[in-house]
Image: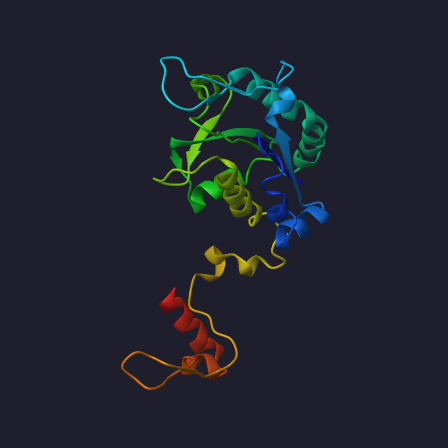
Length: 233
């Protein structure tokens, strides 16, 4: 089982996404465990305050170091039994069970399919999801193992990036897709079509246009079909 832990102040924000389709089935099969942890549960004051004003002034609030550190420590401890069991089973294959703590940041390494393959080697991925003006810099320095960025754009928080990384990595877990051939890196990315064979469309400047399917896909000649797909990919 591959474990994904999300540390956030909005623990239910991704419930519907992880509760549908392939991710839901993979969890039911025991291939994945996806769990969100409420950062406010790791605070010590009666108001469960997880953020505070930034030193030096400025707008917005910053997520505090202490609750994030406690949350990560708790999640690592909670997964210890699972990790020990994984270590025993992995000794035969020579693979070591490992955890990785990830903070989402614009300064982080760009997330790519290559990075997804790298992260898929870990048994547990822990995601720290920032909000507001960000996260105390000491989290990046002393708690997170690495920082990851999805691109040169800004979001309101790290929850959507966590969902994207989880799905990209989960697709690489054996049994997740049913067939390994479903991976795009295996089959390539090429145009696909389905019924109906012909569609009548109204196109500007023309009365009607028939949008059809490439003849090679209707030929039944799988050698030619594979050659066409390779060219298109």
